Length: 457
Image: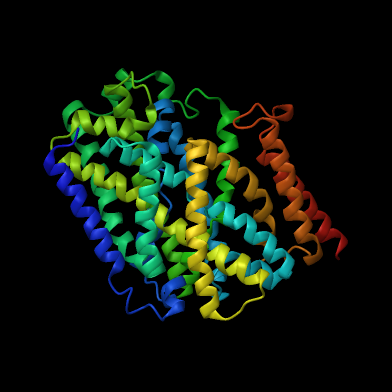
């Protein structure tokens, strides 16, 4: 249990978050462009801090995986994402900034037409729903407060929605700076104390299963390969595009991506080894999802424990607020706005705020129904990535762009095929023919891309 001083630290964090999030929201109330992208003036430090924090909201899931499978966590949630992020940095980031757009569906509509933009908006909306992050936020609040999971998920979503509703993207940028500091501080503290008290690799190797230091963690290569393909979702990750659209310059976008990868490598090192210490010191946890929290409770003194729990909360909150806004923008601008053929910025801004409310309600429903972060991540990625990957990535090259007439059919067909495969083994398999759902959809998408290129010449 937390001491009163730890509770005070958490309370101070919450008050700071609210204060920072609401500062300037009244001044920016009539600046609609600032609400979406902060006027496209995102500097390099701000770009890095907001991207690093937003992309790492699945912290409790990382702790669970590290506890169960050791260093393979780095291969599942690390290396393939670094590679995909670097590809994005060198081949997409500058082009995305050059387009002067606000959302991914706008790019699809500009390159392939209104129908492609509408279909793409649906799948982007699915990708941006913050259900998994709201579930983790609820689990953390339940651990800290002892309340029911339902109320923790609802209250967590209402809290994050409040300052995003008021301040938009600018509020997120401000709060992410604070959360960047706290997430690194928390894990530097706990990993350093564990190392000083118990030792390094020799201690870990003597106290965790041998499979935890094998690259596949005892799960076999096939299981790891599935996650390598799921990492392709990085190339269609809406938070990446939003940050690039908001960057001050094209160089800011590309350099910011590369620097962010370096910070992710450092943070993955800290989180992976913290998970190993949790397994070594607490080998009989009933629920590995609580591994970081249980380790902190058993290892850290007051004040330090409060800072660590605050770091966990900051890591999750930074993703919740970003994805709440992204899903709202997609629903408001790219679904409602295009359906009603609305182009007035004031009207689109109003739609976005209503989209914020709707996406929060839908995300709460999904989180409470699924109650599994891994299931949400895996199924959403397996459905939306095959639909978006090929059309979106190729749209930034006039030479390799997919033939326009093929795009709506490719997106719909790939998603339907993967969706049918998901349903064949809902929720976690086994699936038809023992094949993971992402493979058939990606295969069909690449096949139709090749046919469109050959037949359109």
